[in-house]
Image (cartoon, rainbow, N blue to C red; front, top):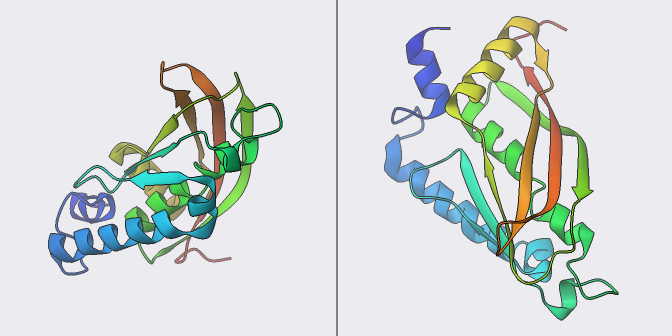
Length: 174
């Protein structure tokens, strides 16, 4: 793939959809939607995205009576929910309309009880996006694995979340 193509895939230039202002407007609108999305609103999940970084989401959740389990710690389903769609959303946005991206599998491993505020940072480096793009164009389909950690206020790991995605290049012959 040419360098120009890679830059447009990873968002290092102004892109093909009208430049930075339009893209940042879309990002702000999507963040607003995510923050009022009923599963997130109900669980108390807050979603943020660092300015100008389309490959990162930061999520957090405070412990409340409505998102705690029987023993007073974070409900496991809420811990998973706060991390669920973001790897897929990042790749969809970065790879563009020439690719199909689906969740394939997920796993969560609980390491310690979550109390208080928990947070996770979901990030895909530009190099990894480029690698996935190249593999999908070469092989037609790729199933990358991503991991993130849910941390408490003392930076201790509460849970480890693993996602496997299915990425298919639409130009591949089936």
